[in-house]
Image (cartoon, rainbow, N blue to C red; front, side, top):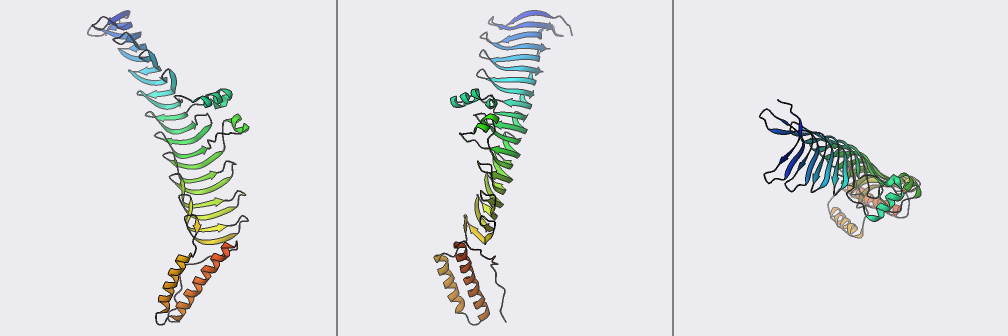
Length: 338
């Protein structure tokens, strides 16, 4: 290959300049880009300016679209590779590492636009002038460790990401509109949740906190709601409930405590309410009792069943009046033949 470097202009068939800069001859005697140069489109608009090696963008350069810069940074064999900056509508959109034309490695992603009240807040408090996200990228998407911010600049989430979603272990912070002086000074609001996420939702083991920073609940979550084994707390820190939950409601087997930490009910819950013997249920029980009483024999079984039903009714009344109930086992020991 020859090494005949020179500054030259190459033209489109219509006479518009296609390229201006360093060229050299290849083995076939054709001019190829090599060195620093600028490529233009057929309307004379600049497309790229920077460094070339053997007709390929290689080194530092700038890409343009309709006269506006869209990328500034490093290239290898015509692809964005290395450190660079992406622009949208003339504003910085991404700054960081690239691989094979994609955001890949550590980088910072910026909001495309911020509405007026948040702009004022960000100007007034330098610590709130934060990007949308900073952390690891793979194949153009958030993947790995990262930190995400609300549009107002406050910290939103820090932890694991998977394909642009909060996924894995992390911490989520409140987004309230009336932050305290301390929160404005630090740029961090109260912790809302710490635990595991799946596709931006609380999913797995975690803890939820109030706006006052108090632990409200801990246990298993599914699709943003407590579902499975969990513990609920009063504002004084005492345990309120330990047991099964579904979509945040007490549902299933559980223990209910008063604010002094004393257990007052142990049994079944349905949609956040403890299982009660309602008038409708009582009528059904009476029908079944009448059928049982109509059977011949089984005097001990009949007696124990009546005693159990009365015991359950008494426990329900005790809880209604704030007294402790006793744990109930809802199955009967057979007394047939006694």
